[in-house]
Structures are given as C-alpha cells and as structure tokens.
Amino acid sequence: MKTKSKVLIIAGSDSSGGAGIQADIKTVTSLGSYAMTAITAITVQNTTGVKSIVPINPKEIYNQIIFSSNDIRPDAVKIGMLHSENVIRSVIKSLDQIKVRNIVLDPVMVAKGGAKLIDNKAINLIRSTLIMKVLMITPNIPEAEILTNTPINTKEDMVVVAQKLIGLGAKNVLIKGGHLKGQFVHDIYVNNNGVKIFNSKRVKTKNTHGTGCTLSSAVATFLSCGKPVKKSCELGIKYVNLAIKSNPNYGKGHGPVNHLNSISLNKKFK
Image (cartoon, rainbow, N blue to C red; front, side, top):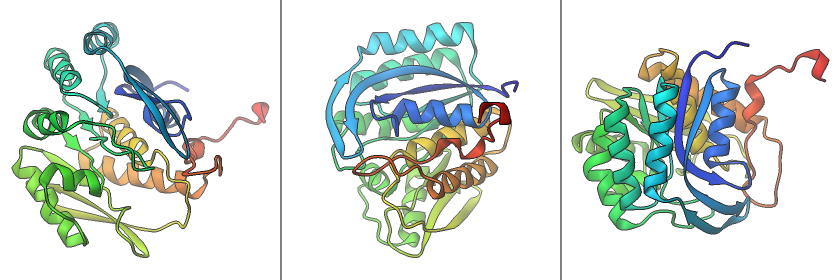
C-alpha cells in the first residue's frame, strides 16, 4: 500500500504502547500515512498508571524536528506531551522554521490514572503562545478547564469554554467529552464560523487508554491527506469509536484501544 502523506509526531513515549508516541505511530500507520517522530520524554508506565518520566533535552527535541523535516517534509504535525516551558519554547522555535500549516495540538496535562504530566509554567506558555501557532487544539474536559480556569459540567459549558479558547487565539477547537457522564459522548467542535456537536453512543469499557492521543493523531492524519478540519474531526472520532469498540482487553487497568480496527489483514498473513 502506498502511503498517502507524512505526519510528524512530537510527543512522549509510553512504554505500555497504548498512548503517547506509540499510539500515534499506530494510528497514523493504520490510516495509511507515514509517521515520523520527535520524542519529548520517556515514561515508565502501564495500564495502571505512570511510574516515572524522563525528559529529553529541549535542544535534542528541536534537532529531531528540524533534521527529520529537512529531509522528509511533513504534511501535518501532531503535538502531544510537552512537559516543560523550555521544551515548549524549543518546539515553537522549530515550528517557526519548518512552517507546516496543519498542526494539531493535544495539550496533554494529566494521565488517565490522574498523574500530572506538565508544570504550571508550561501550561501558561501553551495558553499564551502555542495555541496561536497551531491549526487546531484538542483538549479533553480537564485540560480545557485548566486552560480557561472554567469548570465544565454540561455540554453547554463545553461550548462556552471552546469559545473562550477561540478568544485566546485558537483557530479551531475540539473538546473531547468523554469525562462527562451520560449515555452519549458529546465532542464539541468550535471555530469562528460556528459550532458542531458530534454525538457518539458511549461504549461501556475501562479500555480507553490513549484515546486522546489516538484522536488527535487521526485528525492530523486526515488533515495531512487534504481533508477539511471539520471532516477530519468527524472521521477521527469515527476511527476512535471503532477502536474503543474492538479493544483487545489488555492489562489490569485502563487498557489500550484497537488501533488496527481500520486494517484488514491479507489472507497470506493470517
């Protein structure tokens, strides 16, 4: 199969393979595109939680981005965990140089098990500078609350907070609604032209590790192939829902989703 496009992933590693750069690579590859990476941190974790985080030197993160992009120019960039102010400044410097339009920021701040993955200075820099540099931001509800200092209890609150993020300089916002209780999950897409609510029937499962990473990478992949932003969100949400429904049920905690749900194996490999 010929790859459709190239996607550069800037994110942390997840040793359990369910989230982070491993989930990103699986997503991009499963959707038919070519994945490149710049690793920002190495985490020791499994489905039950995060044990430790080892940061990568910001200069080396910058070098990964520039050296890879100078050779293979990405059609889109997905940004995940940026754990410190210096890392964010390094990434901003590199983005200014490579000049890619399709940039999706997933502002990873808290792990599924509750561990904090980012400091307050980094949060402030994302809020004040980075969200203006990207095409799209895809926070979950806790992350959107942190970025706007506004509580979210309803889908109407999600719309208000998304509009606040637009007010802070974001061009397109997709707030993931999985943290709100209910029979349906409401993902809210907002830009200056209006609001779109994607409604999905909730799947009862504990296996949702890496869904945020997976969604943002799927959206970036569809953008890299030339799809419009709203359509990329729609297709990305559909991909994640199918990945959740067909989960492999691995691990003792929050297990991974099935990134291969979009692939039919050739008979000779079965």
